Length: 394
Image (cartoon, rainbow, N blue to C red; front, side):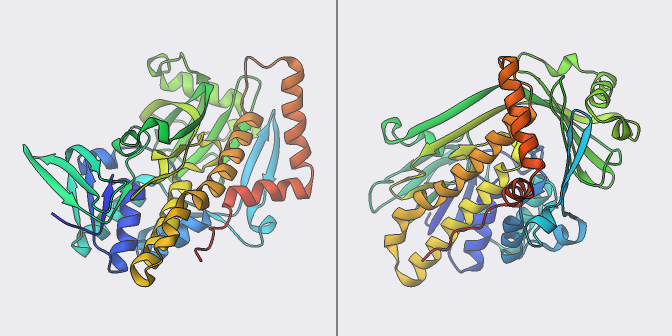
């Protein structure tokens, strides 16, 4: 088998890269170890930066998003009962975010790839990249008990934090930066109307809470819980009671409760590897970096990686600009570290850290209050939240 770009992973990053390359006439083949239903079953992010929205439009997969997605021009901070509105639209000169679930993005990309006749091999086992530092890169995998070899020009590792792409790079070639947070997010999905027309980030002495949504009738709520906690300890009633406690009274009174569709606890971490390239293989999205979800940056960072790699490969194939290949990592990492900083900052400002002494806690509260009481501070929050611009490839 032969292709121009072999893509490992059929999540939104791999599918979006594949769609952009396919539309540009560059041949791709995607290998995914799971089934399509498994990939669609992952409950993930739902806030899309303006840059990602525009990239999905560029890929020609935005029809349903533009019809069903919810454009948000701001969000709410609830700080120990005080509500502060961050007006994204005004503070950024008209930029917004889109509320549209990662599952739906993936579904749209899967449909577009099927319609285009581009190949995705699901349930591909024992995927291994080879020859990444040579002129003859290839990937081996097993399907239905048979071993296959896929020759290619380049490999895109879009297979997530636990995927084979990063693990195929010699450990001594990568530098790892990591922070593990001492808490997780307990999240539930419910068919209930949102408590507010925009997202609400709540800081409370009992811990952080987030009121999010997927549609006008489906909500996603989160509570900060210890990493030692277990989802079985949380009945629906206990969750709703605790959420009400952490919200301002005006919002708690409006909260509509109901049975949960899905309930899980996600750990929080910050993680970056450098570089994001090893020869002819490029790490994309969660394969190279993880952010705590407080800043809504995980999926959006994957999209900016995709944009960078796509535009570099476009110039490689159309203009023979192979000199650009070695710039992939440094271009991506400039944006990655800024998003890591913002996600760390939002997490630090809004969560309760048990190991903090009273002084540290007051400093965190004072810093956030300084930002929200200043127009310049609110503008800084807003421009990071809607997403920093993508770097041009020249």
